[in-house]
Image 1 (tube, rainbow, N blue to C red):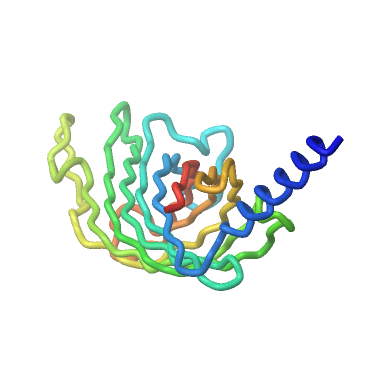
Image 2: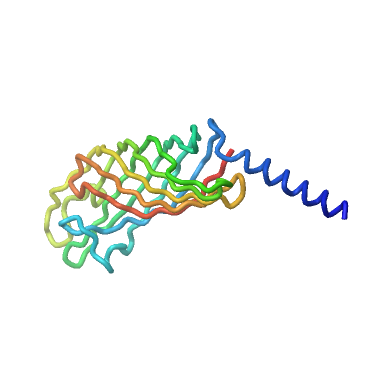
Length: 197
């Protein structure tokens, strides 16, 4: 009986100590995610079932720094590729951006296992359409230009701690990019993992 009681006390002590190590201010995390762009039509409304494009994808790497009350700073690099239909061709658009901003914690359970975060980041980068090839195979000329883009992004993320040092997250994100010849609003779905250091 003493062994069972001792085992129970030790288990509670370990679990309590490990939960206490979560979301410490100043603690850093490195994350990587896979992105799927969401199609919006010319009127910027979602068109299902074509909302998820074939061939569109992206990835992102970021560093997070925990702040007070489970809030966090986010600094990252994101690459996104999306295809636009023109007759029977798919014209690729590629964007690479740096971002930095702040995410607020909206909800977390008592053990800090599940968190819901929202926030905004500043975004700046470069966009290329059809890899700067202006002439299409049918003789048409693209009027878009490769250029620098800038703006912001809105994030809504659900974080789930798998273990104390590993977080799985799902995020809805919308980049708003000024200076683009392609599209201003770029919503995407992201999923990834964060390693807490």
